[in-house]
Length: 542
Image (cartoon, rainbow, N blue to C red; front, side):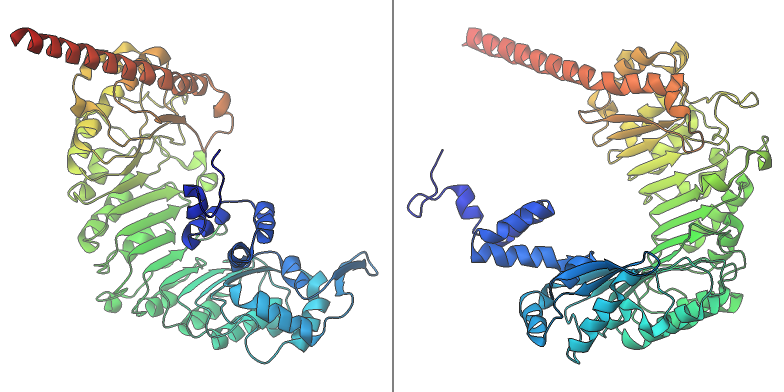
């Protein structure tokens, strides 16, 4: 071991004197290890304090910086905290000198047991902002006290990002709190607002967001009628990312933007997430959205293939820069009884966007398997040479075990065009048939480097049927590289992890690393033999 002395410093010793490297090392440690680093030396202590106090998520730890907290119980079993002894102004000065300027992100979770100590803190604080360098405030839960909410005392005009999450019923106190934030955070550029979309907050949200003309990223609930709010949002010049999502309700029902507003709306929007039916989304995409590149739509309905085709047609016409499209289902909401077994997606329904070679991500969920054949796989691979992530309904609601559902027609041969034509592909999701030799090509089908995936690391087979796991693994090992995974998953059926197909695909996933390693060793051995033969031939010639 090389001793670290001033005359003989090791490279590690020298590296840890570089602030950026030391900070990265400390950030990778757990919190207890970080705290132990404060006693190494003053330089380390300063960096550790910067890391520890950059983001504060525990209110108790924050308040402990002002003095000792004592926990007591009052009548009814409710817990409360008090300072013992009461802090003095000198305690505030100590906090201001040592910790205050380091806090940039503050998360506060509603907890009435801290009300008394926060009131004490409010009395000793100066008139200037409590946390002057705070740029991100996260508020989880409200106490129903309006402008008296705990989070209100940390708000100031330098905050640029704010998260507010409360899922209770409509409350006038919540409206009052939002009005306070609107007045005190004029420079907000990022806002995430999670409210109960079933409550009567739609007018409140519309007024609230009008107070933030500098917004770049916005998350709001999908109220049933969001058309009025969308008209205002469309005129925000800097809005780049808009998410209208929720875990509750039916999503947006009414149309978004009147026809007269369809031109020059959302001038800077690049990313869009919507919770609504595809028909409602179609109305939105009839507006010209020239900057939009990333689209994700969640629906709770059984969407008809014709509606999907119409939506993709409008996207292809109005979103000329689109690169990522995801049409997804909130699967827990879709009922089997509502499914028409005669409707299945085909390549015809997604063909409107196949003409865009810039697509890098395409994901689609449906209650039925996509009806695809080998020629369709060839067409898709040829159309999207830049694709990174592709998922074509590997996990439909009706899987192959349903009596009325035929088995998938795509075999492992469908992977070959993607290996040949899509060099950047990283994840691929397909519903495959691996039940007989007719669907599993022979090993010699992969006879060149052009049929090897360069970057593919995950194949999602959804609920694909399989009966010949060894043949499947042998075929795949010639196409993929170390680190490749096969994932069998179902969001519809909780028992699928114990199914026969699941166990067989797991066997494939476990067998592949062994076969890939054997193949690599074999190839290296062949290269050594060839190189040795070439050297021997050269020596004889001389």
